[in-house]
Image 1: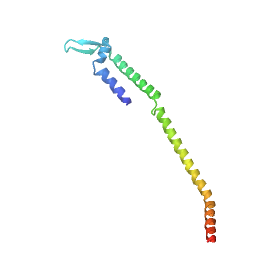
Image 2: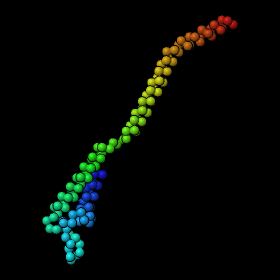
Image 3: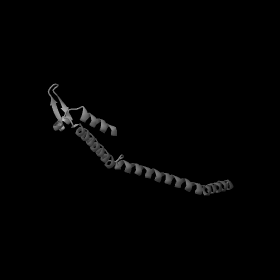
Length: 122
């Protein structure tokens, strides 16, 4: 992604006619070929301009990456809420299991005594 800024700036500065329209004082019209060419000694300004624009694009990209979060806040909140609800449900289920384990012997004793009492009554 970051190299695309460099290649786009190179295309803009070296192959397209947009830079000629952007900075016409760096070019002249060659009458033999009727094409615009760089003025002698102005190539370094074109290179400087192209790489300056590339740096501006890279800084804009870094700024956007630092400002815009990868995951939206409401997605983070929903995920945290979902995880919290799952944790609470798991706690309830654990509590029910523990409660049943502790009360089971008492319930079994009660069943045994009622079954024994019923047999005695017969």
